Image (tube, rainbow, N blue to C red; front, side, top):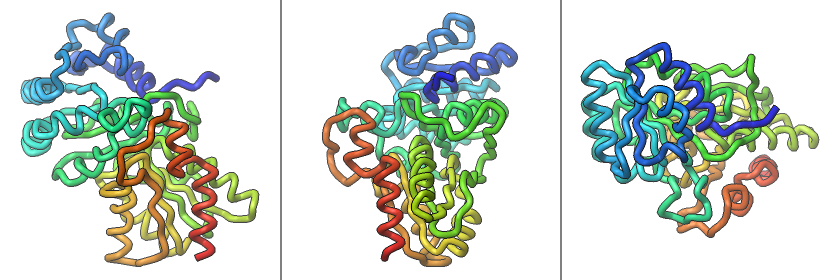
Length: 311
């Protein structure tokens, strides 16, 4: 079966839901094509708002719609939603506790060749520091579908980040568990825990297969929810595995890795390593090239796990 990007899974599911719920409204910032909202806009023009290249206005309009009882989904590139409209997200959405879903498309290094202006590698750090907002990163098309269904009936501010291209699926059409705030255990193992989020989850999953061939049983945790954080899953992994490796398509600062480190330092310090992007303006390349160059591909993750175990 042909793989589809998470963004396409999101818009297809949202269209199906919106046909049954006229309160669902999709908003775009001249981003119909990049979000894959063209079919939605053509099918349900009365449930679609085109805001132009004005992400700040887009978030503000969504907050107003939410106050009127609608269920707005703000859709735009993650790099702009998480920086240009940050004040509106902080005040109009989180502080005001409006029922707005902020959908950041082409997150991380999806726009790899376009450089730092189009990378969103600080968005999780920023959103984590804002009280009252849920943060979600789906791993593949199937989990994105289940997440979208959940969000249609979830009341409260949410930031979602997903990528641009199709990724290897770790779930299936009949198995894609998704519960906000509860991590999924993809593989069992007590030698080391690999904790990943978003589109690094397939890389971590494939790394566990490489390690398995060498007799290393890695526990892979899919942290699709960064906030609220599943503390129990991390502390259990620390106790049973003794070493934790985190992987994220984000700066090493302020994301999943630091959330895990903070928890461990206060409760059960164990050896750990954070795999993420370096604190620099990244070299130019597509997302696959950048993953390999900065050590986020499955082979690099497996090597990092073995090195952590040697230490």
